[in-house]
Image 1: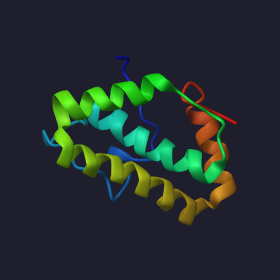
Image 2 (image 1 turned 90 degrees about the horizontal axis):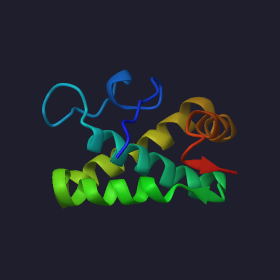
Image 3 (image 1 turned 45 degrees about the vertical axis):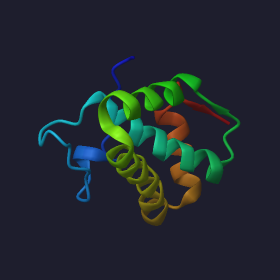
Image 4 (image 1 turned 180 degrees about the horizontal axis):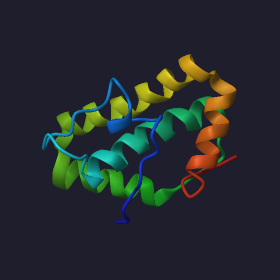
Length: 110
């Protein structure tokens, strides 16, 4: 699994409605990757992305199984999905879709 660097403005420690990491400090890799998976899954449906990185899906599944568990994993996944909606409400769908394509080029493609 690779280390992921989150973009301020999209989620986690940068947002006022941030996901509080379970350890109370910095989000773990798994919290980050599952949140990104939720964000980009929602974006894929709404933005019509044609390609989605299989490694992201695989890493997310491993995180559910080995670190987060089903209940907390779903909470983190839903947080990512809600972050997509929050960004759409703030910036509009077109701008959000374009920003995600630019910020997550290794995960999604048009």
